[in-house]
Length: 103
Image (cartoon, rainbow, N blue to C red; front, side):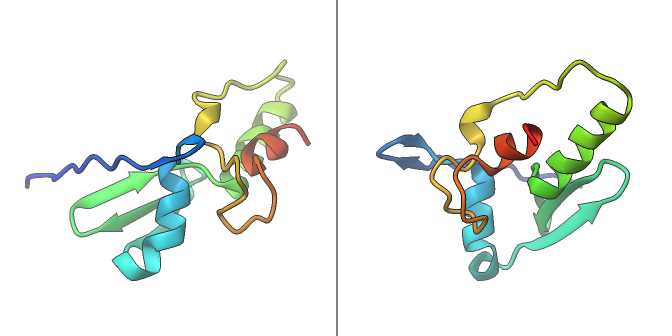
């Protein structure tokens, strides 16, 4: 079995848009299937042998709750520039992932 990887580069006037935003926006037209992995508490999308995993509000909420229940002093975010800084992903607010962590 051979996996195919495709680099997607998307730019806007404010900088790079995140893959989550574009997959959520275009997934119906691209016929990607969205799934939830209960072991990792995170969503992923796939189309044939192509797949992408990401965090959304639900997965960030679960991971933040996990850290809080165990008394962690905080959480680490790999890349804040991949949050929805314009509110384009259907949440109706900007920075929905960071807002979820801060609740």
